[in-house]
Picture 1 (cartoon, rainbow, N blue to C red):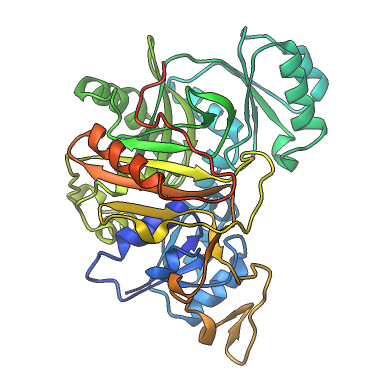
Picture 2: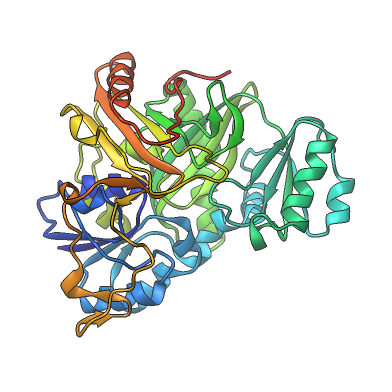
Amino acid sequence: MKLLIVGGGGREHAIAWKLAQSPRVERIYCSPGNAGISSIADCVPIQADDIAGLCAFAKESAIDFAVIGPEGPLAAGIVDEFEKLGIRVFGPNKKCAQLEASKAFTKQFLDRHCIPTARYQEFTDIKEAILAIGIYGWPMVIKADGLAAGKGVIIAEDQAAALSAIKELMSDKVFGSAGDKLVIEEFLTGIEASVLCFVDGKTIVPMASAQDYKKIYDGDKGPNTGGMGAYSPSLIFNEELENTIRNLILNPTLAGFMADGLDFKGVLFVGLMIGKDGPKVIEFNVRFGDPETQSVLMRLDTDLLDIMESVVDGRLADQQIKWSEDRTICVVLAAGGYPGEYSKGDIITGLDAMPEEILIFHAGTQFAEDDPETKIAGPEAVGNFSLAAAKCSPPSRSSVVTAGGRVLGVCARAKTSEEASAKVYQAIDKITFNGVQYRKDIGIIVE
């Protein structure tokens, strides 16, 4: 089979790595890919939000199966467009993608189906939002309704911070139209956890548990990021908690999908807060999480392509899924300044000195001479893509440089969490680039 993976981050690298293990996979394309992905897939210079270009390429290249990584193209309806072409595609359609594209849509869904979550109110008028400052006490959670690359959630500690956040989102438009509507929530206390689930419209199957770390600094300090690390399984999960989550959250969510006519097929990411009152939903995402995917897929002992096809075909209930008992950890190395302004093009050293037990999933990398703005054209061009120029050269051709805020995910698998953690941090000591920053407490529960 010929596969197309849409996206170019650490999540897509992990997905490509796992799919490449399937004996039925003949060739993998990744669009746009990155320096690391190029070692196992043909990188296609079409951006993930260029749906027309991706459709043209998929049709021209006779793609058998597509996997959509990022939330942006899902929210824009890429699955619907691929299905119109008769291409089998893993991911939820545009209607279902609203569960991530709109915080208000999700909160209304949770309320309607009596699924535990924080109290909230919606606002489209800045004056009304300002009047609501402190309605649930402090800290105060302020969310941009739309997509904001994982950074549209602000936890304000006092009135001044809340006022500044509301103005930044609604007036200054720091996240564009995502801030046209705000959701203000009560602040939940406890331990965050993530449950990724395969869903085929009528069956929901949770994957191995994981915990990620959103804050930039150790001890859960500083601004939110897209994720600074993850480990699996979550240290707080046990059989009793898993049963509670299934009965209070997963089963009602599936029933809600069917009641609302949401034919959800793909991955549902459930962000949870585990507090004294039990688990409550913080958010839904409609794709594999990043960096949870890196830590979870390393424990998957079943062919990922088999699972994905069972989801698309609506036969997930018949698919056996096996997980390793090993522990895994993923620590993200980020560019200096992230999640604010950061530099690009800094040379990364040490990647060729990694022991075999270390996996490095590239998130924001490219080759030194690559120009991301270069348009490829030629006699075989499909949009901005040339079939003759599809293959990225292997990493040895040139230096690998930084090209994003989150640059690398350094990962390991071992019998114990302590052993996996030791392997990862020993490997990190060998990797350098200008301004590199990372958390040193991944795998430790933050109270």
